Image: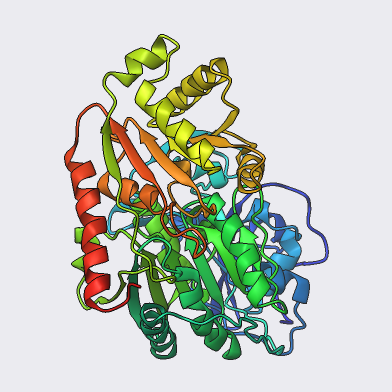
Length: 511
């Protein structure tokens, strides 16, 4: 846009992030202090000072930097996350291709982080960028980069046109339950509605998505499959790449956060960097920790998707509160794709097992169970209530010459260990609740030691039991809950599983 008083040729290198308000062709605009070179001397403020920043219409005579637009397409990023000069960013803003907004704003008298949605976790510091001795910043999302009162957030509504055709290459056949759910997913995507697919563990939820995804891709819609855990991202990505081989898929998780396509499989944490982008939002394991208790993660999902788009929830264990959502369509799949019933856990009293572990001994009833599974050549997955206990039991098993490994949330090598376990290179794998979801191991035997612990909720125990019997070749998995006293959660989990088997039988879906 010609005729401005601003010199865009030289950025003076200052890190100051204060802005002045000005007019450009009858539109109010903000100008960074380091790019302002007019003769007048306006007052500069942190961007949080401005309560309203109007959108500038696109100037079609301007030639945008397509690399910049590709990088920022659908995303919501801080200045430090953008590998472009402030000069380039500001030129695209003035020509309507980028939008800027304050990282922190006061809305209806309450301070709020515009990136994560928090309204309560703020502190102050002396800021060199805005020259304030009490610049506010958001503590809630600081691990994803520091959002301050003077931080501009950049976004773009630009969406690249995707001309390639992506076809589904899958020769499998859906079960009756899967077909019913698949049709509901397709309809939700076509009509931009919401649906919950309540499907038992091992029912084939991923396959239920295939035809809906194929339709969305044929319409060139942007798609996100969001999940609370990195392990699930790593499991889903290769499965979808195998059935959509021509499609570029972007797996996003801690350590890998830069997308390369409009089809994203992401942890819910990474969606903090998106805004109003996805036409189709699929939330896998909607009841899983930490998504189920963290309002900011739910905010990330809502901010990342287009409000006019479709929203699809997947889980085996929805909460009663979630089910009470108004106008939420629910489709249930009470049976597994192979038609065999869900393994019902058996409860085994193990006494004061913690005291025995602390003494360097293993409960005999557990050891006998392990020996039976090893005799049957089954991989053995044992869940424990804490990281500390996982490591203690590993030492006890080592002393009994049982070859095993352990995984938990702080274990950087857990992906490699799970792969070894899947290949049967590790006979026994000890785990915290980190593997309660999203892992499929053929013919696995599953145990919970300390099933009475509060960490093992009804949903957690149902999910853990769901690790067994998932394969059509080995549908009768062994699940044992070793406990020092039955809990309400244990009884409810057993009832939940039996009820699903009864429903599947009544519908004629069991062999």
